Image 1 (cartoon, rainbow, N blue to C red):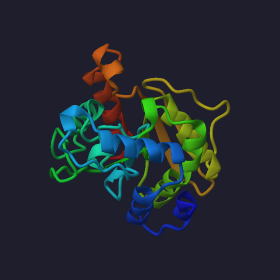
Image 2 (cartoon, rainbow, N blue to C red):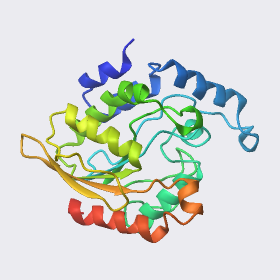
Image 3 (spheres, one colour):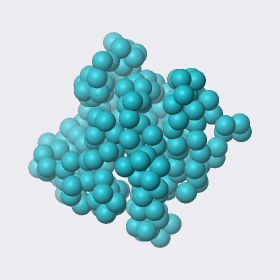
Length: 241
């Protein structure tokens, strides 16, 4: 079954989410996510892992999307929710709370009462990849999910905050494939980078770059709380929230 191709006909975001959860389009990723769910990390030995495609999460009328990379093996792949249960998620959700996008500063499970306001967390790849490195082919195979989500969000969507160069390139490719007009040369990723893209129907989308809240970036000080807050506050302003 070609799960990603079916996303083009999904009527709602919930329909896209259901396709993502059932998707088995990438054999390497399916094998890895299920292996991790069986073997588990010692600290989560008693947990039941989701070990499936991880759907996007957040407001179905979002003005802002945050584009990540892929679920973490022992984070989203365990909990079943984007950026939940790992240190990158801890950083991101704390920042979303500080900047008014979330009702609470932490996320530990799908059932912890977290609600996002005006923002939706999406990703170019929905399965945990080995070494956190999906291949370009896996990214491209997963692209119809992101494309359909952006289309369904189009009545409200104004800003995309992109966490890292992988997500930046994936988003640009997805937008180009959907008929958006990109600047030439294509804008380069950087923390604080900003660019606008337009659609022939008159829609505009502002892209904002932010370093990914990975342990490497946060532990070394390459990304500080003030830096991520500044990008998210810019997103609020640009989106009209």
